[in-house]
Structure formats: structure tokens, C-alpha cells
Image (cartoon, rainbow, N blue to C red; front, side, top):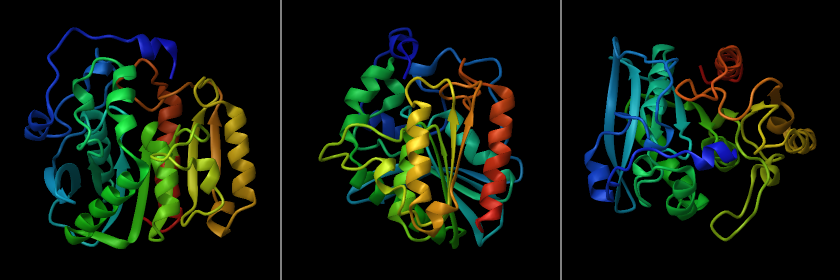
Length: 291
């Protein structure tokens, strides 16, 4: 993350506790840490869609899930959408609706539900220390498993499963691709590839790059100071030495973009690269049997 991101502040607002968080529909607002919202923000309507929130019971915890799908349809190709560190705010919900308009069942689990509400915190540094650091990888994998099970029971096709994620979620997309053998394809948007390890975060994408179940498309910004192009090259080498799905994976660097170039609600948005990336993601899921 850039220093500008870390220093970003918003007007003081009393943070919601976990109980208040669970009372508020996911995808209904933007996270405080990203305000003010840019004029380019894309809003996708729900016409022809069944979209909203479901409270999923997972290991004794209620986890909000935002979903969107074509109304009245079943056996739908299924995409798990994994949020940035800001949680399932309005942008992530909109991405679900964009996929639904293309004929998918898209589901975005609020993977930070146990730790608290990232949307109520005013800075990225606070979210990292108070929320992300308390959300271990093993728990995330299990929660996505539960989300997929719910999606399949509610109109999704377990044989056509894909995952995509942004920033924090981009890293998760790598990890889940290696975790679940039913993943047909993954698209990781500027997800961190290398980094420190701990008991809660024992692996990074570089460690599992050669053991993917579905081919992965990675989309990165050449000007992203937090994810050096050198680490993308490391991942390319690891993929080339891996299993069949890893060898079929591709990593693309957009030289004129930095971090979060797909985030149309932020100043980091680069329209041309965002549109190209979105087309590449659609083509990738079609090519590898999700659509």
C-alpha cells in the first residue's frame, strides 16, 4: 500500500461493533476508509436479478454473504468474489451484480465477520491491524468452502466454479485455487505474491504457485509499489515449473497502472486497463469451463 493510502483519513464516525455490523446489509454502503467516492463509480442495477444478503451459519458464527444471480435460473456458473481489506462494501456487491448480468451466480462472503467491521474504520492501517491480522488463512478457506456449499444449494453449479479477488482477495484467490480441487479457474487482481509468514498466514502465493487446481490469471500494475514486478516474475517462474493448471496460468502486468486500478470508486482507477482486465477475466472464465 502507498503512504498516501496509509495516511488517508475520513471524518470521525463512531465505529460499529460486531452486533451492529451484522444488522447492516453487506454491500449497502462504501467503506469509510475509501471516502470520498470518485465520480467514475459504476453502479449496476438489479433488473432481472435476484440479489441481496444471506446470513450464513458457519461454525457457530453468522457470516453475511452478498449474492446476485439471474432471477429464476438454476445450474448457474458460480463465481466467488473476494473483497479487498474493506470487506463486502458497495463496490464488491456491484461486481457481483456485473457477473450476474453475464449469467453467473456471484457470491461475496464477508470473511471478516468474526473480527469486526472493516467498513467502520477510517484508515487502512487500522483495518490491517484490527481486522486483517485477526483473520487467519485456514478460517478464510473454510468460510469460502461453506459459501460455495451454500451457492451450490441455491442455484450454483459445483462443476463450474471460479474465484476472483482484489488486493487482499487477490492473494486469497491464489490460495483457494490451490485449496479446492473443484476450482475450474481463478482471476487474481493485484494480489500480494510474497511476504512474511506466521502461524495464521503460513503460505503465500509463491509457495503454492506450482500446485493449482484451475488455471489462474493474475492482473497486476507495473507501478504498484506494494507488489513489485520482480515478484510477478518470481511467480511466473514458479508457475512454469508447476502442475498442468499452473503451467496454463498467465500473469499480465499493466505498465501504466498502479495498485487498485480496477477500483472505479477510488482515485487509483485506470479506466482503459480496468476495462481490458474485466474483458480478460470474462474470457478466462469462459476459456476454462466456468461460464
